[in-house]
Length: 314
Image (tube, rainbow, N blue to C red; front, side, top):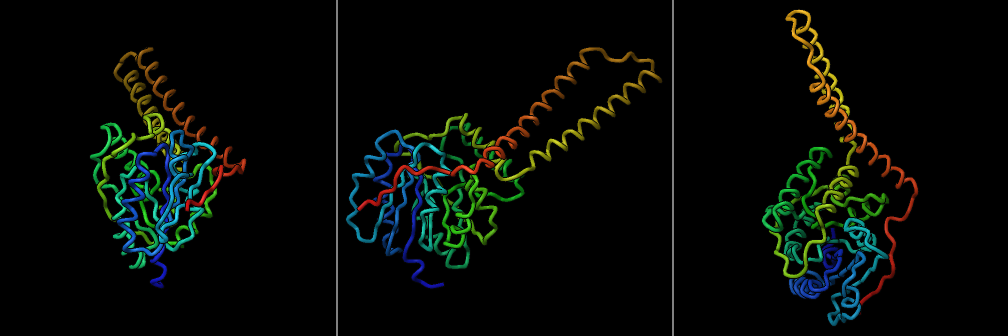
């Protein structure tokens, strides 16, 4: 592995209404990484921002010869994961880091991650170990989401999109063309040699999280469906368990009636059982419907994302 490979780095940064965080992020990143890399290539992917993010980046001037900035404007909001995929598709350096545009990912951790790549790893997951940032429901929801998705996917999935990839990993990821793209799941799926290091997220200085509760629930559903078919298997197991319980309960009632002369329970027991089973059936019909819907959308072979324009900032 040539040392020249470690002189250049691409930074894929998805942004959505982050006008106040962009300049501090660029300045701090350059001051942190310029002593390590000869060339730093920023790849900003604007996921349909409606504030002045577009104007701000277009008006930037880069005076440092060792810094390049590419601005990719998507035609609309496609979601963070597809914005990341767009950035990876435009990466060509041996090293590529994915970093959020809200300045909560500390860029200095990239230097530590580079040492892991030099040791022979293809992927370095920079994982959030502390759930001390954000509202209570988001902290609890994030923790439960990762526990559930790791259980259902069968893989230990990284807790964050913050990571460093070598060109082998990036080129493999470029081959994935599904619309329902979940970056953390794909990185976990490709199975290359990976390492983990920890970071503590910075508190937001400007702006707020773009994920409402509804969006977080939608993201969780899409993520689970994109990485595994185990939810469908859970429906089979639940059906078997409920059938077994129903059979045993029915046998118990029959024995009570024949040998103990107990009256058979009336409508209340029957109604509760019907409502419960009806709810279970609707739940798993919904899960099956989600899989069918995603399959239908994938069968259309639509592009993953649509780029409005690309501009190299000088």
